[in-house]
Length: 125
Image (spheres, rainbow, N blue to C red):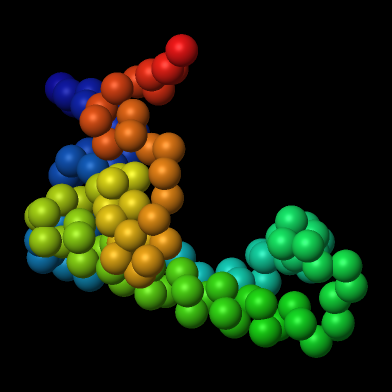
């Protein structure tokens, strides 16, 4: 008699995580991410520039902005991952990102409710 496990055809093992070891073929396939920086579109860069007070934008600026943004995000995410690994956690939270930005001199305010665990921000009257 067949015992139904509710996992479709994949009856062996629990989950699809990378885990600690095992055969390479049994590990989850990671999608290779290439040229994701192109997702930062010209209109998005233009909107950011407008917010910064820029009136006209040269055509060659867009690739420079993408390059600068990629460098900045790489540095911030490297610090963020360092905080997560130090705490032996597997999930990146707002707290680690805020700490990484603060370390780089880019302190962001307004996330106290995220850090303290309150669901709703407190309103002061």
